Image (cartoon, rainbow, N blue to C red; front, side, top):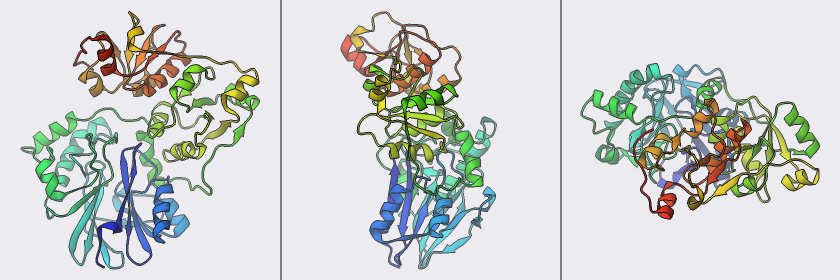
Length: 455
């Protein structure tokens, strides 16, 4: 069909660190690959070109977002393409290794590439037999390969060995073959930092250290040694994707709630999620509110730290978009949004509602207060305040130790630390503060050296 570069449109979800893809098939139809339940960007791209999504392919049972393929099938009649080994319980074209799908001029060939998951497929896009590119999902990614411990730590090595064989298979494709991964920088499915989200087979053979591993054992040791923690909700979503996400008849949203309705909901067990910037949260918030500033990473921390079956009452500030929050929650299966506090904190105060505050500290004011660093292990090891305690933010949900009264909580910028402080305050810790700025800012302000190492 004469495939041009602009026929492939990457759609990046910076918050989750993922890319989905829309492929213009040249006849008014399109192929979507690894589309999430939040289909807004994909639909805007399709509408701009006058395309209807005819095929929706998923490389694997995603753990970090709900698939949008089921919604595309319901709304546009898209044929869902996925691995037969995934045993999905909704209508789909079940594919095995080597199976091909005629896209109308282009061909999509399924390649079994287990490792990230058991049933993982890569999809090789062919034009008259010529390899244009390969959608590698969570197999070969820019500079690495995706994690292999999502099926449990007891299977991580077994799947790492499968990942080794899968990457070797992909590396046998022609060097000019484009590589279109799903997971990229910022993904907890294991991706190194960097700006590049697509690559080529040849570039990865030159630069990917895992492909340069001396042998299978060295590959396994390097891959497993690079794995950090991942969000708790990852353990739930693969099964939801196997069954098929609940269809959304309309766009998710937030209904307005009066202060009285909010009080009743909280009394019945709902959780207040305050999505305002940290300075606004610190100046005054609902007692016991969970702070999760609305930003690209909002969904990650919502899914990591709160259970999915608790009704959520949302507090927003002026200018914040309730639709954005609702979509971020929906893409990870958090559909129990009771609504938002109408009029925000001004309405709550006017109604006589109680508030709590949180102190924001600059580095020169910490003094001898205890410090809790809630960054990831690798961040902490790279440089931290001398004597600081360390617990990753994601581990706080299951950490019963809490924090001593007067603790200063810190991260890289302040958002994660404020989230951590909100969790600790809800458990009873008092006189907490958040360090404004991170460890390098402390070092500059105090003239003292950071410590390295530790976890």
